[in-house]
Length: 171
Image (cartoon, rainbow, N blue to C red; front, side):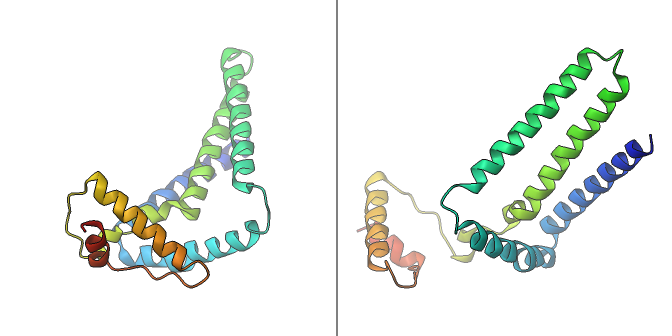
């Protein structure tokens, strides 16, 4: 019985951490900068150095395993739900496991990628003014960008500013 209280305490703790981190990243630019510089970028470099050496998609395998684990938890939860009279304790334990799994999965998403959703849009840094795009303009822009990518095949990529892109598009 002590184990269930520890699990419930862990769920409450994890829920408080998730809410606090989301609030801090959304409302304080220092917290967002800390997330980007000290958490996301080092994790991204580590992930790239680790997974770029492998020729198969590790992410897809991980998603499949997580899906199968979640499916197993749901099947057990449904089974204990249908046999609730015999398995009240097991149903409660399984419900705690499902909630814990979802919170751990969401906190991993928040740490590994989710904080990026609070970054300001790129257009805010470009002094971007809304422009009407038509199909022909988008095709020209696409061809221009492909040409620039082909030119910089082995060199460092330098992005043109927004004015140059608009000039190329609206020719």
